[in-house]
Image (cartoon, rainbow, N blue to C red; front, side, top):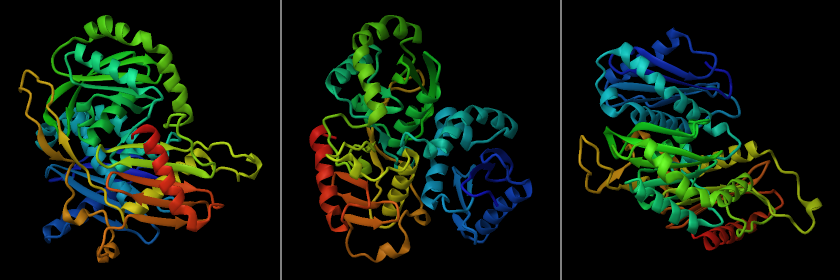
Length: 448
């Protein structure tokens, strides 16, 4: 259907099957194939069956999902050794829908009045959708599109950055502020972190997609918190790859914040920001965290705050010549993503419940009281776990996997999840001890 290691994303109207856009693979699927994919889904629906996914003999996968009974998204991946998992494709569909809601609002998508106009409006989503499609292939190790946890950086001096951000956000008449360093959340206000994890990820992705822009005022809808009323996302580039964001209502103006507040609050911290940028080139963890030399990569998830941090730096051993050569960063991140998908579809849980904070008031609506909200719920047929895991009488808390390239260990506690890749030289019986000590080292030194 598609070449190996490629993915194509299709968007159609649910009722009539009119194609709205296609993104991803450079080789587009023929219209007849697109029509067949839509037709088989509609046939199943007519028979009272929901077709959610299928796999071909050659390893290609197709995943369908209808949103708001209005639009259908279809993800098609090619076969091969690097074929995307069903979990990855499901996440892609959900992220794409949230991306369209973020830019256009839910009402515009749920009530399609003019198909041609909607096609034109959807073009404004292409840049963000393309970044989501490319996310897994980047060398920086972004995992939020898959884990639905905010990608974070733990700075060496978080106190002064947090204090400055809180004061700056308050001066901008908002309670929602965030500092991004090379695309990761370095510090954020409490209410920014209480947004739905998908919203934090998409807002970060949107801010980073505006490269080369020193400041911008972008209208956004929050897919969970405010899908029908737009808010303003103000972004200011403090240094290349250092961006501060504020989510606010109709005031203040972009010019006022840029001319009166940005310089006065952030100019004294230029050297601190440069230090964060230098740290981000090496690791998302501060120098105070010392990792074993035989750790290739790790992912730590805080299950309570839905934040995550990754690292692949290797500390120098006493005899570096004994250290086996590392695989490329891209390969390490790829292996880490595969192990995460392996663990959460078989053993671990992937809850995504969050509390939506009070949103900034707009002319159309007053600030709403805090409510209990969750991410777009998965229907019963979209359970993440494979069938055989349902036979367990307990909730697994640890798992491991040995491959030809590395050894993997997963550890789940009430507050954290750790996904660890180590060299093959680490004895299998020692993996639990290595993982436990690593998690303690990260959380103890950073409070993450």
